[in-house]
Image (cartoon, rainbow, N blue to C red; front, top):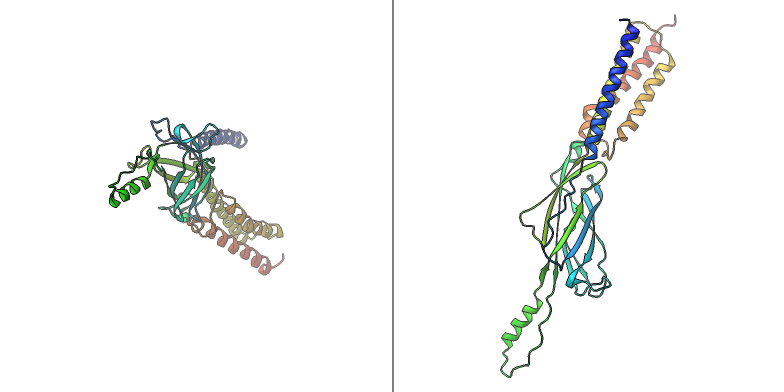
Length: 304
């Protein structure tokens, strides 16, 4: 087999392998989110909660979740307004948050900022983070019908009655939560304390498969191109080949292009992550050394 036929055969095989690998990775990337809804309350009188993730910022350590509410049964009027004053309690990154939805008004959506933990953003793209979404609803019970006052009513009994009226009961709810965000794979798991009136949902957040593949590809590309430049410079210096200005321009272009390639990775943190120490910093240093070597070779080598 001639060299030309061998080159064509190799190119065809490599193209088929590359397309097959790309197809497999794409199929994995499309199935990257666990969107199972939580258990629904077995009651006709409940609050329907629709949750979706608006943003994820591993650098700040925040996950912003938007919650939309709809009341049903004894909690809603025919026009969709509340029959009772509803209190919503949740835990955000700033601490406990309490929102009161007044009787006779619609329940407006709210945004909850969750704190991310158990993760180091410097491990990009293999960093793993967690966040917990927890909330519950309470409402004051209906006041009983007033009884005729008795002459011998004691103050202590009256005080106990007032305390009973101030107690609040928890409200059942149904949650539909879609933990999807481009560039991330999110899985959810409820704690044992969760029930029809209380939610404690733990989210595990990792980078999507395609993000990991692309980041590794970028690092590998910088290493291989830098290695090729080193071999190229060694050939020019030690085999007494002619140094041309285009050679130095090529290396200088790579020196600045690697910065743009590094920053093109999806949701990449600022310079200083672990991948930079493995590939980017070394590639930049070696390219700079190769550029200086070519310049001084061009200056010191006598003109033939």
